[in-house]
Length: 417
Ligand code: BGC
Image (cartoon, rainbow, N blue to C red; front, side, top):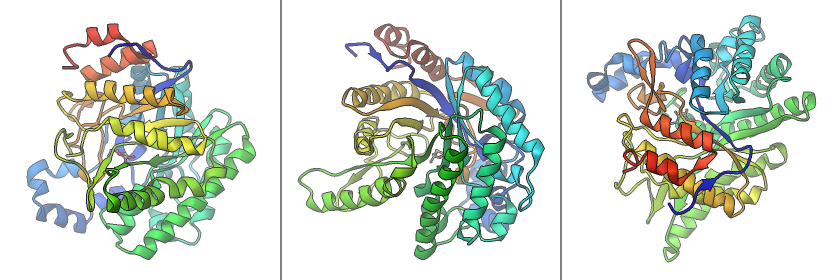
């Protein structure tokens, strides 16, 4: 690296989590699904229980973050962060339809305050996938009353913590949730139905708009957006079929939702993980450099997705980006190389204002369970002890220098080989 890559003044640096993945003790549609007969049978059939053990697939105590949030934020502060992203657990706050638990609301007010006390700007995600059991029983996102429920839930949040939250993320990755839960049938409620998929997608658009209005009515100064999961669809210029597939995939997967809500969002939250090489069809990777879960490591993609988002003319916060890497051998250079691409995109006009790595700590990786290690901080699941990985030290220096400098590269030379 020839020059120092210094980021704009006030750039936000941090890491993200989601309630069900770290809190522990959640009781929602996911936790019940984890324990269901159907799920266990499936795991046994694929011999996954043999491979990883039954506990791997049960979110259980998570990382104990529900009780340890204050310590975890202190740790994030020591790690040089000045921002954090977490989600609120709907099933705790509204355990029965229409009955809101004041104690749990207060818990999340305390979480927001703890973040601020530790110098972290909180990005609060309202919904990061699980839903309360009563809502599951009413049909979840397919329930006709869903919009009313979501708006009412948002109202409660705004009245409890609206004065203290600047950044709201209404929904996490509507694209991924609908595809996994309603099209591919892998996640609860395990439907494989095109009409359900499209219906839920539409409902999520409406839910965002409603929640946006609720928040902005009470707090016009709030910044509201979603976390969109954008993929770099990559087709060579000479591959005409590929170019058509790319155009369709970009239109539907990357931009449709954002286009529909463009008048109702103050920023774009970008979650970025994937590079799809398109030949005559989609292909996730070309098996070169892979993370522990088999995803291609391709930092250059970040540049393309950011440049593509410029069209919306909104500030962009990267709300997730990272990789499963239990030995931490690949994470250090992944972080540096990705930040180089973000810096280049900023130089070329992308209004990127923050980077939140996924994840602050190892966590429960949905259907995969605990084995994939996405954390800057390693969790010992027996003791719940936290330990900064080498990449967390590197990232700390990056945060504190507001960028990647030559001196820093020298200091971490051994990690970056
Ligand atoms: C989700 C996270 C998840 C991460 C890694 C994102 O799609 O928002 O909850 O852990 O990807 O798979």
